[in-house]
Image (cartoon, rainbow, N blue to C red):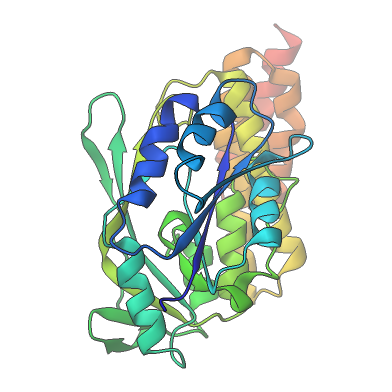
Length: 323
């Protein structure tokens, strides 16, 4: 019998996406799966819409959190109850190609001593226009050790640094051995950058990764995306998002054993996130110049090479004085 895949999906107030989500799983050519839809206390018809499908397919299960825990908490709930040999993740508003699960299991089963986790690339599309706005392809030079048919095997000693410097693992494309990732928990204190941190932990643990340089997931960008992929979030909402990215870089500096070069990279990114994404991008448009002052100062102290942060620090003082 084919091994069981536990598909974990956090879902909250997505009544209009339930049918698309379930169809992308039901239409997989691979059929031995359980779909764990973790409802994070939705206030709309999400749960009742799921129930309509679950009545006719016992593989579809809706688990409701007793209290809202966010996407990370919902994924942890899924990990706690998953019974599959493999774990896959999907988001409530995205889709897979029909052969996604079958292809990933093929490599995991055929090369069990060389691959613990399979990944592929996402195709990013705008929900309103249907147009592709990003082709995520990884530069595989210098980071792979061998090629098994169409799968590139990452050098596990280099994966962490590559993941730190730029995303090489996409959560929606992961299918992994349960015993290799079940103990890796999602950070429930972060509301954004959660995938970044989780996948960085996978790389830090030197999980053996096989990668297909092809598109397996469609990531739909729309106004409800947390990180503004739809392009229309207001500054108040984006202020909260950027606080999470700031905390992400603080966690990287605090919790991982970094080389001197990696630490310098993390400090630079924390500085840029503080100064340009947070202070300049969200606080200044709201006229919060006094709040910008300590942010620009911290950004400068973290990365003094960027003198523009010091200039912005003094400008914020003047704007506060003469506001």
